[in-house]
Each structure stands twice: as C-alpha cells, then as structure tokens.
Image (cartoon, rainbow, N blue to C red; front, side, top):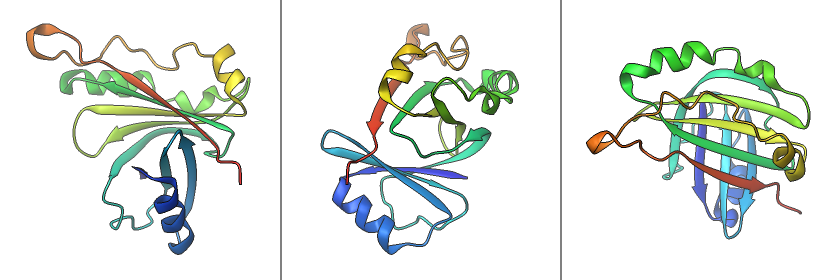
Amino acid sequence: MLTISKGTYGFLKKWQEHHEVDHSELYLSGSSAVLIVEGSSPVDSLSQASKYEVLASGGTLHGEFAVMRYLPISEDAQPIFEQRHKNLGQKTGNGLLGIRLLKPKSGDMYCVVSIWDKETSYQYNSVPLVDESLMAKGPGGLFEAPFTKTYHLPKE
C-alpha cells in the first residue's frame, strides 16, 4: 500500500517526525507539500490522504524531483491498463530513480509516481511512461483531463 497526503510542509514534516512509518518521503511545490508513505504504516491521522494499491514498483522513492501523473481510467478499461503496465517497475534508468503505478482504493484516478535524480533528467526523458489511450470518458464522451504535479526535495 502507498499513501499520498497533501498539506503544508510544516504540518507534514511534523507528522513525519512524530510517526514511525515503514518508509516516507516529503516533497515540496511552492507553498504546498506532499508526503508519500509506503508500506502498511497507519496513516489515519492524515486527513488529506489518498490510499493506493501498488501495481508496479521499481527503484526508490527518494530523489531530487518527484512527478505525479494522475490518469482517469474507466472501470471497463482498468484490467487492460493494469495488464499493459504490470512491468512498469523495470523502467528505471537515465535519471529515473524510482517508479510506482498506483491504483486508487476508491475512484478511477490512477497515479504514476516517478522519482528523478534532478528536474532536467525528467525534462530530457519525459516521454509518457504509460499508455494513456485508456483514459475514462466523462459526460458527453469527453475525456476527463489527466494532470501532472511536480515536486522538489526540500533543501534543509
């Protein structure tokens, strides 16, 4: 299991320092932050937490630059999407330090977390890591928009 929680850097840093968890990484983007908790550690006290099942995993969650690509995958396309990407964890290299393909515990918004050695590695190697042709269609047959969030490792 993997949990992603969004909030202020101060709150998430304090939570991270006061809770024993299997593994966690804290990243910053402007005035907001994201805490990634991997494993079965209890995270119930994080109110803005999204829980995911890890479908594919490779490498580490620690790096200078983190990218979260959110993709709405329709219920009928989920088995196909998951089958196509079951080996995604083998894609590390060229500055890509770690990757996780995440299935939400509720909803249809999958997440691909990629961890990079630096932002320029992501920029030079930012080919799509997954096939986005199976995204969910919203009302009127329009695709729900995928989106990307980027974060940096805080300088302490």
